[in-house]
Length: 350
Image 1: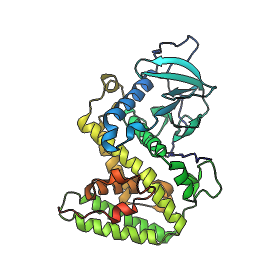
Image 2: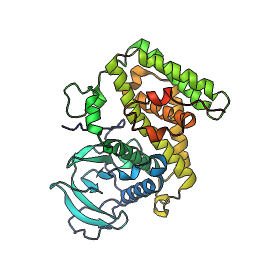
Image 3: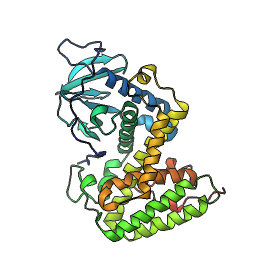
Image 4: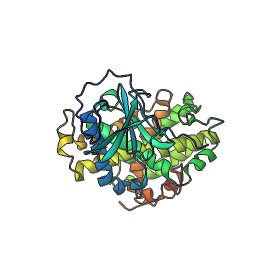
């Protein structure tokens, strides 16, 4: 059985029902069918538009991945851009803004969910609550989060992914994919906690040195520190950490890269800019980067637990941009680990 590749971001508490007005815009909608709320139509359309405009500038085959979305609202779930909906969904019609067919059913998932897994018909599907009900809160950040989840669809869609995940040997009998979240990594080990704090600071130093003459020295120190931390782990723990950094950390890196490109070389639609909670993407990119830097400086492994991989992996991606600009083309050749990309990184003259 293929592993259900969950990619869950840290959830917040269940939110109250959102009361944004819904504007019917579906050609075949019946009077009895629910309407996709207008702010959500605009947000999803912007995410599709941004993915088309910017995605391949970060990842070579981004446009080959499925982009099915299941939007969870307090009463209903709306399925968009899905090739084969299951029989429990009812077609509303084709949305003129989204340029996609939309289906609905009664709500089944929590309204604050942010996850990517084969939720409908075995197809990798982003299951996401409305911005107001999730940790994203605002429209611009929510769109970038949706593209984080789309990156997981990209990862999962590459040939041989399921077999390669199974070959890691980390599931230990679990067939649901929940091992990716629940794996018994030694987060509470104080020795390891100290090592992760040192690793975080070494990454922060290399990140800060990009473009300076001391970058090569900082990179060398990082590679040595990284190797010491990994060498002290049990084999399964090492594979799990490498996998999570490769999967979730690089998804956070992708958030930053997309937001940065959107800030400098993308014009949001007028309808998206008109949303009451719109923020410029420059502010979103700055917020993501400052969050990464803040987390690296004060890693507490016993408290952060699995979420530590977000800042570690994102920072590693940004350091690799400076050390080895071709690394993204090699990302799937060294699947589930960035180790070889670091050890083989050429030393560039400042």
